[in-house]
Image 1 (cartoon, rainbow, N blue to C red):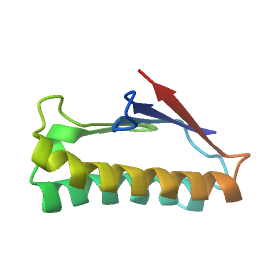
Image 2: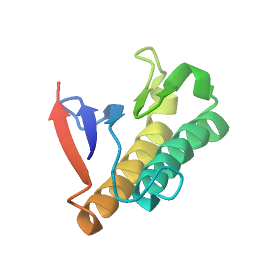
Image 3: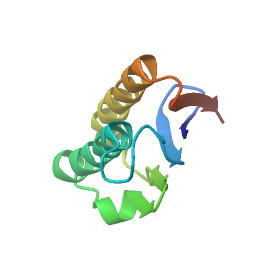
Image 4: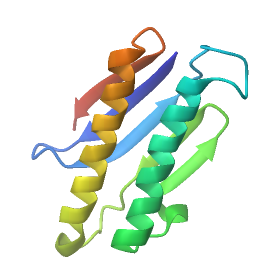
Length: 112
């Protein structure tokens, strides 16, 4: 199962996505659920780089079965709006995948 932890602050700003595990829906290279989750994360990372100007290397760490996407704490207020829209859209994507494939994906929202 893929577990997606979404870390928000008290105002609802999403600071991190932690994605762990494998869906196990199909064999490696053919697993559409793993692909969907991966594309969703990479799209967010690339959007933050292209739209906001924060390099993907500064926000996203990838390993087999693990992704940490983290927004730098010192991000300016002027960039937070665009980041918020991207991260909230990404969360909608994750929840859409979970809705259809809830035996393979779990989204957990945490406030810190």
